[in-house]
Amino acid sequence: MENSARDPVRTSAQQRPDAPALIAGQTVVTWAELDERVSTAAGRLAVGTAPGDRVALVLGNTVDFAVAYFAALRAGLVAVPLNPGYTADELTFALSDSGAGRVVAEDAVLGRLRLAEPVAVPPAALRSGEPGAPHPVAADDLAVLLYTSGTSGRPKGAMLTHRALAANHDQLALIEPPVLAATDVVLLAIPFFHAYGLNTGLGAIAHYGACGVLVDRFEPAETLELIAKHQVTAVIGVPSMYTAWSREAGVRSALATVRTAVCGAAPFEPADAVRFTAETGKTVLIGYGLTEAAPVLTTTAVSHREKTGSIGRPLPGVSLVLRTADGAVLWRDGLAAAVEEDAELDLDLEVSAGTDPGEIVVRGANLFSGYWPDGRDGPDADGWWGTGDIAYADADGDLVLVDRIGELILVNGFNVYPAEIERVLDAHPGVAEAAVIAIPDQLTGQAPYAYVVPALDPPPTPAELQVYCAGQLARFKLPAGIELVTELPHSPIGKVRKGALR
Image (cartoon, rainbow, N blue to C red; front, top):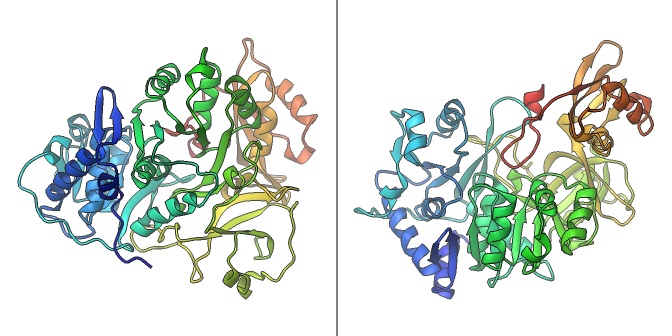
């Protein structure tokens, strides 16, 4: 087991010094140039800091972010990527909770914060000056604190080590045929403050020595122009991106060079996936993961690449079971021989495809070390961690995501999954988007309540939508109320923020 942390930028600079690493507008940075800039910035960040000190990065998808991020890791510090769109209150909480001693941000963000502590560092300050000596870095040292939004309350910082970040790349690299290679030109439009954009995007191009085309703000037409201009071969995307592209004229020719399209971070509706493939001729690989897993856990790249509605199967090196609330195992896959003897999980049980829903419980080298600062709620003593997500295995043995445990609605003791109701509502021609939450109910304990964004003018009435649902859902699953709204609150990667609806 390796004890020293990897430095993928240094490795790529040695293997492909003159190859482009990052493209941002008219700027092209080679791997040798990026390595030099990272070394300078690492030295600057090391001045006045101790090993493990936190450095907040409040920047968009820019070369400055990449330099500051890899510099923090090389310097033996802990990177804390934060959303530049956060309010002053949200940023202040994350800075205070993480105990960040440095904040790398543009002047506009720094001005909003009015900081006394920590020390503000504009990106330009990392490009010159008297450097210090970076601190030694071990593989099991904390590398990144990523704040997860959660469903309610304040975000929590997931602690990811250098080993966990590297492990996810090793797991993905075992897939055949390969998802990414050194020769790929990758569109990086997912925010770097998100685990998906940070490690599956930025981290992956460093791992392979590939080239990343940076996009700070997604616009469908503009990104298609970038893809065509730079002959992009791989796209790391979310459902809303592919849906938006499928509606653009000339999308098929714009994506002609793309050989790999990956979708994650939120469920990709099968109808939208079918439309994208019909318009472009490209199949989208679906992935599932969480911040706490650095982030990928499963993908259709290891099962049925053209299948819609599934999240595939576990990555090589990831062990996964579906488990009931009382600990019984419904399904298992990806388990090493040693795990088969794990009596605690009752793995002598014969399980097969086509199961009832259960919680996804995982084990792998890519898992986090718990939540900041004390490692609470991390993997158990045997390395297993419950994701809080519900899934079942279909007849092919592929996983289908159902919902979050926290989203589960108990109606007279019966499980009701909001995602099932949302899929029915979304299929109505008069519905652009729907979100379902639980509300208290004196008779049933809880009841579903739906928020609907209309797609037509005049919009369908709540009564019409109730009748529509009644034709496809059992009575106990029917929404107790349906409210028409102009829009739903979304996170930066397109997920509905149900905590705001509550």
